[in-house]
Image (cartoon, rainbow, N blue to C red):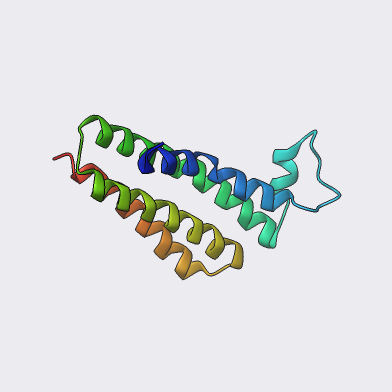
Length: 124
């Protein structure tokens, strides 16, 4: 598996990091109605759940960029670096979200979004 494909896979499973963190070790979790239960959470659990939603939102833009870049055979060395930076930024985004470091969270979100734009620009 090449780096861009591995990074798409990593980005695709990243929402699970937020979901698992939001639910981890909580004995009152209601698996019959998990969305309502999660909507009622506060603090780190609520932020972990919000990061899950944001990861789902970020995934299609990134995945489409990578698939198009592979199709159009852009510079693979640069694509590898951009994909790795995206995954790293999204992991740091999750950690900043969890720790309630809002400014860093915004910075890491911006880096990830900027990487997607940079991938698209390679196809011009």
